Length: 261
Ligand code: LHQ
Image 1 (cartoon, helix red, strand yellow):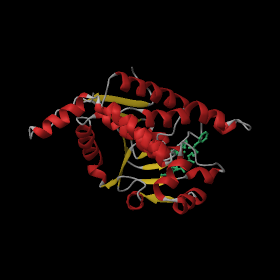
Image 2 (tube, helix red, strand yellow):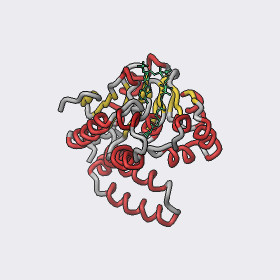
Image 3 (cartoon, protein in one colour):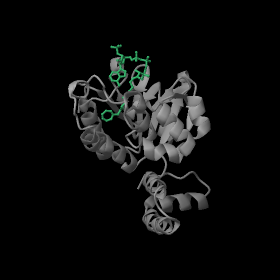
């Protein structure tokens, strides 16, 4: 399918989605939401084994398009309805995708743009990139899962500080705080991310999907529920061909050839 506001490339089992409104710092329009939703469907149907999300130009994503006609002109717009229709399903879809989702944050990630990055499973960021919980600057509340992920990633004090000041945090500090996985020199970002994505796409994808489920569920579960969930997910993993191949390869002292099943 041809898209207007994003680019989608699928190669070597890696689906790369590039938010592509660089003159608006890749701010989210309704069209971009709809296209990203369609792209995620396409990626699932293509049975890709990793997804990379990045931005075109100098930004990753500046959040909601504040110049969109309804956001800019309608006085009593129900922003909750927008979240329900677009942002919440997007975050859920990223968490539920049965493959690793990697954010390659190439520049500023502000507002919902920051939290969509944090909604990915692993975040790599360019050294010059930054994250801004910009919501308070315009009288809003962090959304797109920010109030859920931030305190869990960096603790309540730091989450509170970022959210109530709207201050920018640079990629290096974000990595030191554990908000993101890795900070990488700008020139090396995409090469390193794509190399990582191509590698992870050769790993036991089904197992990775189950790992995601377990870890995200752990954020809300008590120990008993989590132990039960681990039992259930391990049962599923244990029936997989990748488990058999992994053990066989170990015993035969050779690299495993995982199919993702
Ligand atoms: C933009 C945007 C943008 C449109 C830059 N929209 N054009 C909200 C409402 C509804 C429902 C649900 O959820 C949400 C969630 C949210 O995301 S709220 C938060 C929305 N985002 C922001 O408040 C961030 C706004 N942008 C900025 O603060 C700055 O642009 C940052 C700090 C990201 C980058 O600053 P600079 O590097 O100085 O760039 P700039 O400000 O000069 O922007 C470049 C262009 O991009 C400019 O257009 P122009 O035509 O003047 O060149 C901006 O107007 C445009 N742009 N963000 N969100």
